[in-house]
Image (tube, rainbow, N blue to C red; front, side, top):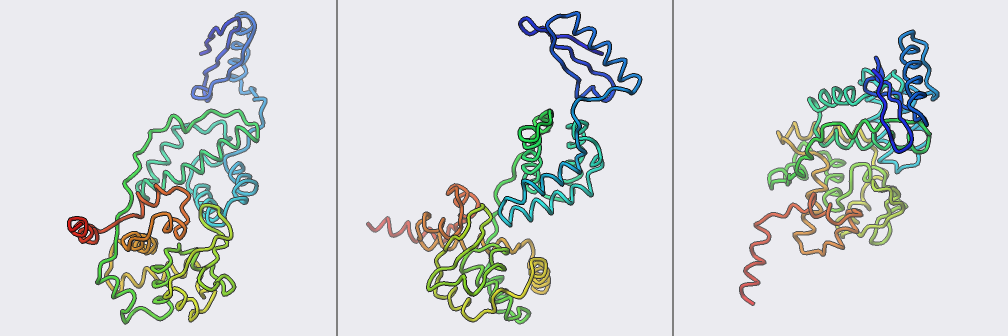
Length: 326
């Protein structure tokens, strides 16, 4: 059914029939008579199957390909890889991937989300949703497709609390000194604990990046380039003795880490938790948070505090006694 709304001296005709119930056809006219005529014409065209929109909308799959080729390619290597991986999985898994983008509805996205979070974390979905929203915004503002803000009508999922996982003394000993840990993995794990670097950043280190007491990071996850971080004496020693670049690819390191945990029967510990451990230890050592921010590379210091500042209460207690003695 069509409807007409008056706006000042104009009349907006709205057609809601068939596939256009959720995405109505709309047009503004100077008179109510013209608006009625428009509604009757469009409803008849839709009924006969001859209605054509003025905009040549691409399919969702083609929109994703264009986004990867024109937008995502300009982002940092870490973000580019994550977006390519996530969107390619989406192309395979999303049932309505071959629909025109103007035919995608909140119902489609909501049903996909419900299946998605059955096997993945809510936080992973929320990160992926950021990609979809950005792609949709680019399609509307830069590529000129008149689209509804379908993501605004989605149920808002609560972001989970930051992960709090520190290594136990047993885990630390097994991972860095255990019989099942080969020399290469010992060096990688110790280097991660000394620098707080991400897996991709570790694998990208070359000999020429190592300076006297600093390490050059060509690309960081936040988009920064050619950033230098300070190195501890232990980190310098490790880098001097290691083969660089590390003779492993991303998935290879992921696989070795998984098998190592299985050997030692360590549960719920990700490689990224080594970064948590390193940065939390720096803060426990009393290093000013501004200095730790240089190491971590966070643009927002609150992220460093809320997500990585997992300080153990036992390390703070002695400091309280010092205060009492003053």
